[in-house]
Length: 246
Image (cartoon, rainbow, N blue to C red; front, side, top):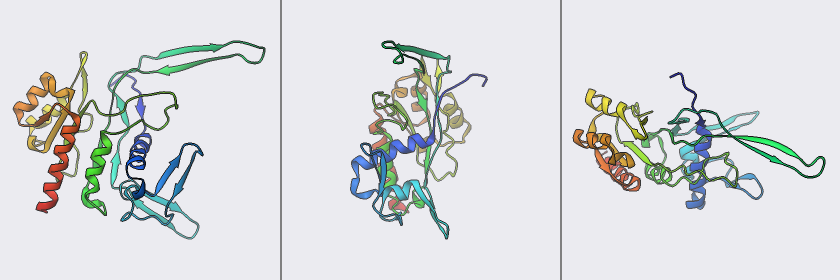
């Protein structure tokens, strides 16, 4: 619309997912980041999507003069957008003391929630079962890249919409909207009623299930779970069933 919103880059979100895999699957990732040395290291600079989770999910590119080694990442991530418009909140700070040791600074702040969408086709992975590992990472994000080391912003989902489908288009991007003081999903309800999304393809978890929108989704035949982790586990089971049937 005509409002101004804050955003978080897709690169920052991908960095957070990489960090999750570095901490939970250190032997199965190629690229690691050392925060003390502030540098990246590679187990194999020739890369291997078969061997490494990160090379498979996120892809890679090594540009050389003679040739370029690259793989398009199977995982697609969009920029996160705030649910609330940004009204220009600013914190002012100053430091006094000896001559030449003074400073004045300000920090822009936004107290809000963010929504973003990921898309992944398991068949594009060298090891399709890694799609389940990604679901674990989505609810286990520690923080997004770019945060100051002393700043904590919880980036795990408060509510989540999962769609397991053969449809090439996600259709669920931007589903969440601020409705009064709460969060709703009027666009998702519209798409289900219109027949563009099948209700049995959807799994919804988290706080939104306790709202009037959650009750409407339940009546439409959507699987609802009060916990985000419970919804994630159900999606993993659904993925496993599809792999067996295929």
